[in-house]
Picture (cartoon, rainbow, N blue to C red):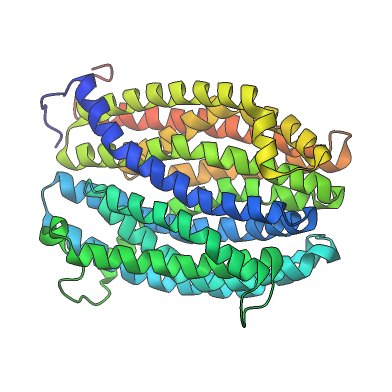
Length: 458
Protein backbone atom coordinates (compact mmCIF):
# COMPACT_ATOMS: atom_id res chain seq x y z
CA UNK A 1 0.00 0.00 0.00
CA UNK A 2 1.22 3.50 -0.82
CA UNK A 3 2.15 5.47 2.26
CA UNK A 4 2.43 9.21 2.81
CA UNK A 5 6.07 10.26 2.85
CA UNK A 6 7.93 13.54 2.83
CA UNK A 7 7.92 15.07 -0.65
CA UNK A 8 11.27 16.58 -1.58
CA UNK A 9 11.65 20.13 -2.87
CA UNK A 10 11.63 20.97 -6.57
CA UNK A 11 15.30 21.92 -6.32
CA UNK A 12 16.13 18.50 -4.87
CA UNK A 13 14.20 16.70 -7.60
CA UNK A 14 15.79 18.78 -10.37
CA UNK A 15 19.25 18.10 -8.97
CA UNK A 16 18.73 14.34 -8.95
CA UNK A 17 16.99 14.39 -12.34
CA UNK A 18 19.89 16.23 -13.95
CA UNK A 19 22.41 14.06 -12.10
CA UNK A 20 20.98 11.18 -14.11
CA UNK A 21 20.04 13.02 -17.27
CA UNK A 22 23.33 14.76 -18.12
CA UNK A 23 25.51 11.60 -18.29
CA UNK A 24 22.68 9.77 -20.07
CA UNK A 25 22.42 12.67 -22.53
CA UNK A 26 26.13 12.52 -23.28
CA UNK A 27 25.77 8.77 -23.75
CA UNK A 28 22.79 9.20 -26.08
CA UNK A 29 24.57 11.87 -28.12
CA UNK A 30 27.63 9.67 -28.35
CA UNK A 31 25.67 6.64 -29.50
CA UNK A 32 23.61 8.69 -31.93
CA UNK A 33 26.90 10.24 -32.99
CA UNK A 34 27.99 6.84 -34.30
CA UNK A 35 25.26 7.09 -36.93
CA UNK A 36 26.08 10.76 -37.47
CA UNK A 37 29.71 9.95 -38.22
CA UNK A 38 28.62 7.23 -40.65
CA UNK A 39 26.28 9.67 -42.41
CA UNK A 40 28.84 12.49 -42.63
CA UNK A 41 31.66 10.24 -43.85
CA UNK A 42 29.40 8.54 -46.40
CA UNK A 43 28.07 11.91 -47.54
CA UNK A 44 31.57 13.10 -48.38
CA UNK A 45 32.11 10.03 -50.56
CA UNK A 46 29.13 10.61 -52.87
CA UNK A 47 25.34 11.09 -52.86
CA UNK A 48 25.06 7.40 -53.81
CA UNK A 49 27.04 6.31 -50.75
CA UNK A 50 24.97 8.57 -48.53
CA UNK A 51 21.74 7.19 -50.00
CA UNK A 52 22.98 3.60 -49.53
CA UNK A 53 23.70 4.25 -45.85
CA UNK A 54 20.29 5.91 -45.51
CA UNK A 55 18.55 2.81 -46.84
CA UNK A 56 20.70 0.43 -44.77
CA UNK A 57 20.21 2.38 -41.57
CA UNK A 58 16.50 2.65 -42.38
CA UNK A 59 16.18 -1.12 -42.01
CA UNK A 60 18.87 -1.77 -39.38
CA UNK A 61 17.78 0.92 -36.93
CA UNK A 62 14.22 -0.38 -36.30
CA UNK A 63 15.48 -3.96 -35.83
CA UNK A 64 18.28 -2.85 -33.54
CA UNK A 65 16.00 -0.65 -31.43
CA UNK A 66 13.28 -3.31 -31.26
CA UNK A 67 15.60 -5.88 -29.70
CA UNK A 68 17.69 -3.52 -27.57
CA UNK A 69 14.47 -1.75 -26.57
CA UNK A 70 13.20 -4.97 -24.99
CA UNK A 71 16.18 -4.79 -22.65
CA UNK A 72 15.01 -1.40 -21.37
CA UNK A 73 12.83 -3.49 -19.04
CA UNK A 74 16.01 -3.92 -16.97
CA UNK A 75 15.87 -0.23 -16.00
CA UNK A 76 12.44 0.00 -14.29
CA UNK A 77 12.82 -3.46 -12.71
CA UNK A 78 16.22 -2.59 -11.20
CA UNK A 79 14.93 0.87 -10.20
CA UNK A 80 11.96 -0.72 -8.43
CA UNK A 81 14.21 -3.21 -6.60
CA UNK A 82 16.54 -0.34 -5.71
CA UNK A 83 13.59 1.56 -4.21
CA UNK A 84 12.65 -1.56 -2.25
CA UNK A 85 16.27 -1.90 -0.99
CA UNK A 86 16.62 -5.43 -2.42
CA UNK A 87 20.21 -5.84 -3.74
CA UNK A 88 19.92 -9.62 -4.20
CA UNK A 89 16.94 -9.10 -6.50
CA UNK A 90 18.90 -6.53 -8.54
CA UNK A 91 21.70 -9.01 -9.26
CA UNK A 92 19.21 -11.67 -10.36
CA UNK A 93 17.40 -9.25 -12.66
CA UNK A 94 20.69 -8.25 -14.31
CA UNK A 95 21.82 -11.86 -14.86
CA UNK A 96 18.50 -12.92 -16.31
CA UNK A 97 18.53 -9.84 -18.55
CA UNK A 98 21.91 -10.87 -19.96
CA UNK A 99 20.59 -14.33 -20.85
CA UNK A 100 17.63 -12.83 -22.67
CA UNK A 101 19.81 -10.17 -24.32
CA UNK A 102 22.20 -12.75 -25.78
CA UNK A 103 19.41 -14.84 -27.27
CA UNK A 104 17.62 -11.79 -28.69
CA UNK A 105 20.89 -10.48 -30.14
CA UNK A 106 21.53 -13.72 -32.02
CA UNK A 107 17.98 -13.65 -33.41
CA UNK A 108 18.36 -10.02 -34.50
CA UNK A 109 21.67 -10.77 -36.19
CA UNK A 110 20.12 -13.60 -38.17
CA UNK A 111 17.21 -11.39 -39.24
CA UNK A 112 19.64 -8.81 -40.61
CA UNK A 113 21.32 -11.45 -42.76
CA UNK A 114 18.04 -11.93 -44.66
CA UNK A 115 16.85 -8.31 -44.64
CA UNK A 116 18.61 -7.36 -47.93
CA UNK A 117 16.13 -9.64 -49.73
CA UNK A 118 13.48 -7.00 -49.00
CA UNK A 119 15.32 -4.16 -50.75
CA UNK A 120 14.16 -4.93 -54.33
CA UNK A 121 10.60 -5.50 -53.08
CA UNK A 122 10.66 -2.05 -51.47
CA UNK A 123 11.62 -0.39 -54.75
CA UNK A 124 15.17 0.50 -53.74
CA UNK A 125 17.14 1.49 -56.89
CA UNK A 126 19.58 -1.12 -58.24
CA UNK A 127 22.51 1.30 -57.84
CA UNK A 128 22.08 1.23 -54.05
CA UNK A 129 21.55 -2.53 -53.57
CA UNK A 130 25.17 -3.81 -53.30
CA UNK A 131 26.38 -1.34 -50.67
CA UNK A 132 23.14 -1.27 -48.67
CA UNK A 133 23.06 -5.09 -48.62
CA UNK A 134 26.68 -5.43 -47.47
CA UNK A 135 26.07 -2.81 -44.79
CA UNK A 136 23.18 -4.87 -43.38
CA UNK A 137 25.07 -8.19 -43.56
CA UNK A 138 28.10 -6.80 -41.72
CA UNK A 139 26.38 -4.78 -39.02
CA UNK A 140 24.26 -7.81 -38.08
CA UNK A 141 27.28 -9.51 -36.48
CA UNK A 142 27.32 -6.86 -33.75
CA UNK A 143 23.73 -7.39 -32.60
CA UNK A 144 24.41 -9.73 -29.62
CA UNK A 145 26.81 -7.12 -28.28
CA UNK A 146 24.22 -4.37 -28.78
CA UNK A 147 21.53 -6.15 -26.73
CA UNK A 148 23.85 -7.30 -23.95
CA UNK A 149 25.33 -3.81 -23.69
CA UNK A 150 21.77 -2.43 -23.40
CA UNK A 151 21.06 -4.80 -20.51
CA UNK A 152 24.20 -3.82 -18.60
CA UNK A 153 23.59 -0.17 -19.35
CA UNK A 154 20.06 -0.31 -17.91
CA UNK A 155 21.38 -2.08 -14.81
CA UNK A 156 24.13 0.49 -14.23
CA UNK A 157 22.00 3.57 -14.88
CA UNK A 158 19.13 2.36 -12.69
CA UNK A 159 21.58 1.99 -9.80
CA UNK A 160 22.56 5.64 -10.27
CA UNK A 161 25.82 4.98 -12.12
CA UNK A 162 25.37 6.41 -15.63
CA UNK A 163 28.93 7.76 -15.94
CA UNK A 164 30.77 4.52 -16.88
CA UNK A 165 28.43 4.11 -19.85
CA UNK A 166 29.04 7.76 -20.76
CA UNK A 167 32.82 7.39 -20.79
CA UNK A 168 32.66 4.23 -22.90
CA UNK A 169 30.27 5.87 -25.37
CA UNK A 170 32.55 8.91 -25.78
CA UNK A 171 35.57 6.68 -26.35
CA UNK A 172 33.61 4.70 -28.95
CA UNK A 173 32.75 7.91 -30.77
CA UNK A 174 36.43 8.67 -31.20
CA UNK A 175 37.33 5.09 -32.13
CA UNK A 176 34.72 4.85 -34.89
CA UNK A 177 36.42 7.43 -37.13
CA UNK A 178 39.64 5.43 -37.75
CA UNK A 179 37.64 2.19 -37.95
CA UNK A 180 35.42 3.70 -40.62
CA UNK A 181 38.42 4.94 -42.58
CA UNK A 182 39.99 1.48 -42.55
CA UNK A 183 36.88 -0.27 -43.90
CA UNK A 184 35.67 2.54 -46.19
CA UNK A 185 38.99 3.21 -47.89
CA UNK A 186 40.78 -0.10 -47.32
CA UNK A 187 43.98 -0.94 -45.49
CA UNK A 188 46.31 -3.89 -46.13
CA UNK A 189 44.21 -7.02 -46.73
CA UNK A 190 40.97 -5.08 -46.03
CA UNK A 191 39.46 -3.98 -49.37
CA UNK A 192 37.90 -0.59 -50.07
CA UNK A 193 34.20 -1.01 -49.23
CA UNK A 194 32.91 2.54 -49.45
CA UNK A 195 29.91 3.35 -47.29
CA UNK A 196 29.28 -0.37 -46.67
CA UNK A 197 32.44 -0.41 -44.55
CA UNK A 198 30.54 1.50 -41.87
CA UNK A 199 28.68 -1.69 -41.06
CA UNK A 200 31.86 -3.67 -40.33
CA UNK A 201 33.32 -0.83 -38.24
CA UNK A 202 30.15 -0.44 -36.16
CA UNK A 203 29.84 -4.18 -35.47
CA UNK A 204 33.43 -4.39 -34.19
CA UNK A 205 32.92 -1.31 -32.05
CA UNK A 206 29.77 -2.71 -30.43
CA UNK A 207 31.64 -5.80 -29.22
CA UNK A 208 34.43 -3.64 -27.80
CA UNK A 209 31.90 -1.46 -25.93
CA UNK A 210 30.19 -4.47 -24.37
CA UNK A 211 33.47 -6.09 -23.31
CA UNK A 212 34.75 -2.91 -21.65
CA UNK A 213 31.50 -2.23 -19.76
CA UNK A 214 31.30 -5.84 -18.54
CA UNK A 215 34.92 -5.71 -17.34
CA UNK A 216 34.34 -2.40 -15.53
CA UNK A 217 31.24 -3.71 -13.73
CA UNK A 218 33.15 -6.84 -12.73
CA UNK A 219 36.11 -4.87 -11.31
CA UNK A 220 34.43 -1.79 -9.79
CA UNK A 221 33.59 -1.87 -6.05
CA UNK A 222 30.52 0.30 -6.75
CA UNK A 223 28.67 -2.81 -7.94
CA UNK A 224 29.85 -5.11 -5.12
CA UNK A 225 26.45 -5.46 -3.42
CA UNK A 226 24.65 -6.20 -6.69
CA UNK A 227 27.48 -7.85 -8.65
CA UNK A 228 26.22 -9.42 -11.89
CA UNK A 229 29.25 -11.67 -12.44
CA UNK A 230 29.65 -12.83 -8.83
CA UNK A 231 27.79 -16.09 -9.45
CA UNK A 232 26.22 -18.09 -12.26
CA UNK A 233 22.47 -18.47 -12.68
CA UNK A 234 20.47 -20.58 -15.08
CA UNK A 235 17.62 -18.99 -16.95
CA UNK A 236 14.76 -18.49 -14.50
CA UNK A 237 11.30 -18.85 -16.13
CA UNK A 238 9.76 -16.39 -13.65
CA UNK A 239 12.18 -13.58 -14.47
CA UNK A 240 12.33 -14.39 -18.17
CA UNK A 241 8.55 -14.07 -18.32
CA UNK A 242 8.52 -10.89 -16.27
CA UNK A 243 11.31 -9.19 -18.25
CA UNK A 244 9.75 -10.11 -21.59
CA UNK A 245 6.25 -9.17 -20.42
CA UNK A 246 7.52 -5.72 -19.51
CA UNK A 247 10.20 -5.35 -22.18
CA UNK A 248 8.49 -6.66 -25.31
CA UNK A 249 5.88 -3.88 -25.34
CA UNK A 250 8.68 -1.33 -24.79
CA UNK A 251 10.66 -2.72 -27.71
CA UNK A 252 7.60 -2.82 -29.94
CA UNK A 253 6.60 0.74 -28.97
CA UNK A 254 10.09 1.99 -29.87
CA UNK A 255 10.00 -0.08 -33.06
CA UNK A 256 6.65 1.39 -34.14
CA UNK A 257 7.95 4.92 -33.56
CA UNK A 258 11.46 4.63 -34.95
CA UNK A 259 10.53 2.45 -37.91
CA UNK A 260 8.12 5.08 -39.22
CA UNK A 261 11.02 7.54 -39.30
CA UNK A 262 13.56 5.07 -40.65
CA UNK A 263 11.40 3.57 -43.39
CA UNK A 264 10.54 7.06 -44.60
CA UNK A 265 13.77 6.97 -46.62
CA UNK A 266 12.53 3.82 -48.35
CA UNK A 267 9.09 5.32 -49.05
CA UNK A 268 10.64 8.29 -50.86
CA UNK A 269 13.45 6.28 -52.53
CA UNK A 270 11.76 6.44 -55.99
CA UNK A 271 12.11 10.25 -55.85
CA UNK A 272 15.85 10.02 -56.49
CA UNK A 273 19.22 10.12 -54.73
CA UNK A 274 19.21 13.88 -54.10
CA UNK A 275 15.87 13.73 -52.26
CA UNK A 276 16.93 10.67 -50.25
CA UNK A 277 20.22 12.33 -49.28
CA UNK A 278 18.47 15.54 -48.17
CA UNK A 279 15.90 13.54 -46.23
CA UNK A 280 18.63 11.55 -44.51
CA UNK A 281 20.34 14.76 -43.41
CA UNK A 282 17.12 16.11 -41.91
CA UNK A 283 16.37 12.79 -40.20
CA UNK A 284 19.92 12.63 -38.85
CA UNK A 285 19.61 16.14 -37.40
CA UNK A 286 16.29 15.46 -35.71
CA UNK A 287 17.59 12.10 -34.44
CA UNK A 288 20.51 13.86 -32.76
CA UNK A 289 18.23 16.45 -31.17
CA UNK A 290 15.79 13.74 -30.04
CA UNK A 291 18.53 12.51 -27.70
CA UNK A 292 17.68 15.41 -25.36
CA UNK A 293 14.06 14.45 -24.59
CA UNK A 294 14.96 10.76 -24.76
CA UNK A 295 17.64 11.21 -22.09
CA UNK A 296 15.17 13.09 -19.94
CA UNK A 297 12.66 10.26 -20.42
CA UNK A 298 15.20 7.63 -19.31
CA UNK A 299 15.96 9.69 -16.20
CA UNK A 300 12.21 10.00 -15.57
CA UNK A 301 11.84 6.23 -15.88
CA UNK A 302 14.49 5.73 -13.21
CA UNK A 303 13.17 8.39 -10.80
CA UNK A 304 9.55 7.30 -11.32
CA UNK A 305 10.56 3.65 -10.90
CA UNK A 306 12.35 4.34 -7.61
CA UNK A 307 9.32 6.13 -6.17
CA UNK A 308 7.06 3.41 -7.57
CA UNK A 309 9.12 0.78 -5.74
CA UNK A 310 9.27 2.88 -2.57
CA UNK A 311 5.48 3.35 -2.71
CA UNK A 312 5.76 7.13 -2.69
CA UNK A 313 2.89 8.25 -4.93
CA UNK A 314 3.10 11.97 -4.25
CA UNK A 315 6.80 12.19 -5.11
CA UNK A 316 6.18 10.11 -8.23
CA UNK A 317 3.63 12.62 -9.50
CA UNK A 318 5.85 15.56 -8.63
CA UNK A 319 8.78 14.24 -10.66
CA UNK A 320 6.43 13.74 -13.61
CA UNK A 321 5.36 17.41 -13.52
CA UNK A 322 8.96 18.56 -13.25
CA UNK A 323 9.90 16.30 -16.16
CA UNK A 324 7.25 17.75 -18.46
CA UNK A 325 8.24 21.32 -17.61
CA UNK A 326 11.92 20.54 -18.22
CA UNK A 327 11.12 18.82 -21.52
CA UNK A 328 9.14 21.85 -22.72
CA UNK A 329 12.06 24.20 -22.06
CA UNK A 330 14.48 21.95 -23.93
CA UNK A 331 12.06 21.64 -26.87
CA UNK A 332 11.77 25.42 -27.25
CA UNK A 333 15.55 25.72 -27.22
CA UNK A 334 15.81 23.01 -29.88
CA UNK A 335 13.29 24.80 -32.10
CA UNK A 336 15.32 28.01 -31.91
CA UNK A 337 18.51 26.11 -32.74
CA UNK A 338 17.01 24.55 -35.87
CA UNK A 339 15.54 27.85 -37.06
CA UNK A 340 18.73 29.89 -36.76
CA UNK A 341 21.38 27.34 -37.77
CA UNK A 342 19.85 25.36 -40.66
CA UNK A 343 22.44 26.48 -43.27
CA UNK A 344 25.37 25.67 -40.99
CA UNK A 345 23.89 22.28 -40.08
CA UNK A 346 23.38 21.30 -43.73
CA UNK A 347 26.95 22.36 -44.60
CA UNK A 348 28.32 19.85 -42.08
CA UNK A 349 26.75 16.99 -44.03
CA UNK A 350 27.18 17.92 -47.67
CA UNK A 351 28.79 20.38 -50.09
CA UNK A 352 26.12 19.71 -52.75
CA UNK A 353 23.99 22.92 -52.89
CA UNK A 354 20.89 21.12 -54.16
CA UNK A 355 20.99 18.53 -51.37
CA UNK A 356 21.72 21.20 -48.75
CA UNK A 357 18.87 23.45 -49.91
CA UNK A 358 16.24 20.73 -49.76
CA UNK A 359 17.58 19.48 -46.41
CA UNK A 360 17.11 22.98 -44.93
CA UNK A 361 13.50 22.94 -46.16
CA UNK A 362 12.79 19.57 -44.54
CA UNK A 363 14.31 20.73 -41.23
CA UNK A 364 11.37 23.12 -40.88
CA UNK A 365 9.08 20.11 -40.51
CA UNK A 366 11.38 18.74 -37.80
CA UNK A 367 11.09 22.08 -36.01
CA UNK A 368 7.29 21.83 -36.04
CA UNK A 369 7.04 18.70 -33.89
CA UNK A 370 9.67 19.30 -31.21
CA UNK A 371 7.22 20.11 -28.39
CA UNK A 372 4.96 17.16 -29.18
CA UNK A 373 7.98 14.87 -29.35
CA UNK A 374 9.24 16.02 -25.96
CA UNK A 375 5.84 15.53 -24.32
CA UNK A 376 5.14 12.10 -25.78
CA UNK A 377 8.55 10.64 -24.88
CA UNK A 378 8.34 12.11 -21.35
CA UNK A 379 4.91 10.51 -20.87
CA UNK A 380 6.24 7.19 -22.18
CA UNK A 381 9.22 7.39 -19.79
CA UNK A 382 6.97 7.97 -16.79
CA UNK A 383 4.69 5.12 -17.81
CA UNK A 384 7.66 2.75 -18.06
CA UNK A 385 8.73 3.72 -14.57
CA UNK A 386 5.23 2.73 -13.42
CA UNK A 387 5.71 -0.54 -15.37
CA UNK A 388 2.87 0.28 -17.76
CA UNK A 389 4.12 -0.74 -21.19
CA UNK A 390 1.28 -2.49 -23.02
CA UNK A 391 -0.90 0.62 -23.32
CA UNK A 392 1.91 2.77 -24.80
CA UNK A 393 2.71 -0.03 -27.25
CA UNK A 394 -0.82 -0.01 -28.71
CA UNK A 395 -0.88 3.78 -28.74
CA UNK A 396 2.33 4.04 -30.74
CA UNK A 397 1.19 1.36 -33.20
CA UNK A 398 -2.06 3.23 -33.78
CA UNK A 399 -0.44 6.66 -34.05
CA UNK A 400 2.43 5.75 -36.36
CA UNK A 401 1.33 2.79 -38.46
CA UNK A 402 -2.46 3.11 -38.61
CA UNK A 403 -2.48 6.91 -38.98
CA UNK A 404 0.94 8.42 -39.80
CA UNK A 405 2.21 5.87 -42.32
CA UNK A 406 -0.81 5.85 -44.66
CA UNK A 407 -1.01 9.66 -44.52
CA UNK A 408 2.70 9.98 -45.29
CA UNK A 409 2.68 7.46 -48.15
CA UNK A 410 -0.38 9.05 -49.75
CA UNK A 411 0.94 12.62 -49.52
CA UNK A 412 4.46 11.75 -50.70
CA UNK A 413 3.56 9.44 -53.58
CA UNK A 414 0.13 10.55 -54.76
CA UNK A 415 0.23 14.33 -54.34
CA UNK A 416 2.63 17.07 -55.37
CA UNK A 417 4.04 17.34 -51.85
CA UNK A 418 6.74 14.74 -52.55
CA UNK A 419 9.15 14.17 -49.65
CA UNK A 420 7.40 16.84 -47.56
CA UNK A 421 4.33 14.58 -47.45
CA UNK A 422 6.10 11.93 -45.40
CA UNK A 423 7.07 14.61 -42.87
CA UNK A 424 3.49 15.82 -42.59
CA UNK A 425 2.50 12.23 -41.83
CA UNK A 426 5.14 12.10 -39.09
CA UNK A 427 3.78 15.29 -37.51
CA UNK A 428 0.24 13.89 -37.52
CA UNK A 429 1.41 10.63 -35.92
CA UNK A 430 3.41 12.39 -33.21
CA UNK A 431 0.42 14.59 -32.38
CA UNK A 432 -1.84 11.58 -31.89
CA UNK A 433 0.78 9.71 -29.83
CA UNK A 434 1.40 12.77 -27.66
CA UNK A 435 -2.29 13.25 -26.83
CA UNK A 436 -3.01 9.59 -26.09
CA UNK A 437 0.11 8.99 -23.98
CA UNK A 438 -0.57 12.04 -21.81
CA UNK A 439 -4.15 10.90 -21.31
CA UNK A 440 -2.87 7.43 -20.41
CA UNK A 441 -0.48 8.86 -17.81
CA UNK A 442 -3.23 11.04 -16.33
CA UNK A 443 -5.56 8.04 -16.16
CA UNK A 444 -2.94 5.90 -14.38
CA UNK A 445 -2.26 8.62 -11.82
CA UNK A 446 -5.98 9.08 -11.25
CA UNK A 447 -6.53 5.34 -10.68
CA UNK A 448 -3.70 5.19 -8.14
CA UNK A 449 -4.99 8.31 -6.40
CA UNK A 450 -8.46 6.78 -6.05
CA UNK A 451 -7.10 3.40 -5.00
CA UNK A 452 -4.91 4.77 -2.23
CA UNK A 453 -7.06 7.79 -1.35
CA UNK A 454 -4.45 10.38 -2.31
CA UNK A 455 -5.57 13.71 -3.89
CA UNK A 456 -4.49 13.88 -7.53
CA UNK A 457 -3.49 17.53 -7.27
CA UNK A 458 -1.22 17.01 -4.28
